Every structure is written in C-alpha cells, then in structure tokens.
Image 1 (cartoon, helix red, strand yellow):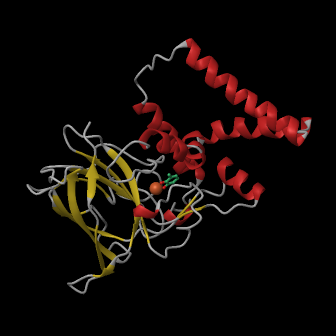
Image 2 (image 1 turned 45 degrees about the vertical axis):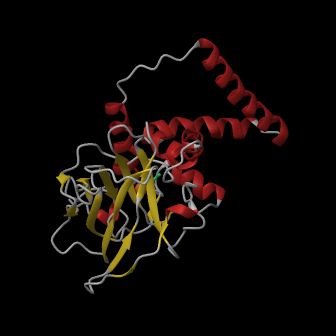
Image 3 (image 1 turned 120 degrees about the vertical axis):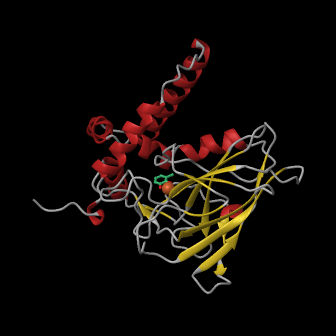
Length: 283
Ligand code: MBD
Ligand code: FE
C-alpha cells in the first residue's frame, strides 16, 4: 500500500469533508415563509429558463447538467462549489451597510473549536513548518475608535503547500488554526507562516467544470478570520498579499482592495511582518 501524502490531496478529502462538516453544524431549522420560498424559487427557475431560451440549450446539454449535478452531490462538493461561485454575493448583501472592516466569504474549511491562544502566540504548526515566517499583528476596535479588550480572533489558513488541516491527509488536526484572545488594549501578535495559493481539487466535479470551461482553479494565498467581541457584529473575512498570484483573478471573487496586506521584512530579521487593525460594527 502506498502511503497517502499531502501532495495527493484530492477532492475526496477536501470537498467531501466540507460536506460532512456542514451537515454537522446545520442543526437549526429555519422557518422561511411560503411566499419567500415561492418568490426565490420562481425567480431562480425563471433565470434558468431564460438561459435555455437565449442559448438554445439542447437535450444533450440538459443531460450533461443533470449528470454533473448528481456528481457534485456524490463528490460531496456542494459546499465547495457554492462557496467558490455564489457565497461572495451573499456576503456582499449581508454586509452592505457595515461601517467597520470589510468582510469576505467564509468558504468551506472553517472548523470551530481550534486551540485557545493568548494575545501573542504562534499558531499550532509542525516542527520546522515550511514557509516564510509571518508576524501578523494589530488591534481590534469599534467604529467609535475605542479598543475592544479581549476580542477573539479565530484564525485558519492553508500551509505553504496550499493544504488545510482536517481537509487534507497527514496534517496535524489543528495545524495553522487557532483562537486568539486579544489583550486589554485589543491588540494581538500572531506568529505564523505565509500560506500558499489554494487550488480547487482538479479531480472532482467543481474541478471538472473549471477545466471544461477553460477557467483556472486558483484562489490567491489568504488568511481567514472570524473576529468577535460582545455587543458587536462578528466579522468573517480574509486577508490577501499584495502582488501575490491570482490576487487580481480569484476564482471565488472574494478579494477587495481593503483586504490586501503588504508585509515588510520583520524587524527581528525573521521573515515578514504586517500590521492590520479590525474595526467591528455595533450589534
Ligand atoms: C478556500 O480555501 C476558500 O477559502 C474558499 C472560499 C473556497 C475554496 C477554498
Ligand atoms: Fe481558504
């Protein structure tokens, strides 16, 4: 038997794990009115009918769609597909009226319950974790400019090969995931490594659509965050790196100019450092 290594991470380990994760967290029954369901379902269906008419869609193409949708479910890739191609608009609508820091999509790879860490901390990582060291530091404040002592930063990221712990084999459970509590001034200093760009698995249905359409399968390197403080709206966001590959053509359309970091050489000579402050809206 060949050993499974990170470099063989496939759709089965990432997309399908995201489906399992989503089903576990989805316990709440949402009460949506008949009127709302009817309006949304009718408009979505009408949009599809319209595309069929405008493009003279054939029975062959209709059957290809059916086969593909069946396979997305079998691959467990609905969370991956929807978060890559749809979530950015849901995020835009949800956060339209916020004054504070910009949000971005959560994506399929958030896992609650990462190890608790103090205001200055190194994210859990392997001995000799590959990648450029990065010190990510800053302050959490309200829109009134007041610091938010004890704000909580839930952080998750890919490693320097582009893999997320719990969604690729051979990574320690909480690798590069942590829940940091800011200090009495709302400040934090998080020691980590630069993540690599993320490639959508090429062997699953989402990857099949991407290659059939001739698109690329890449998201720029990014750090994920959920920032929370009592009495404030939690921000879910991502931060990117100036000049990084695919910052200007993210397959998930989740980059905003305000979310691009420009790290400088670290003052201790060890890798890079960057300062970024998060501003939370009142709840
Ligand atoms: C990711 O890492 C991600 O952040 C999103 C939004 C979609 C797929 C993979
Ligand atoms: Fe991600």
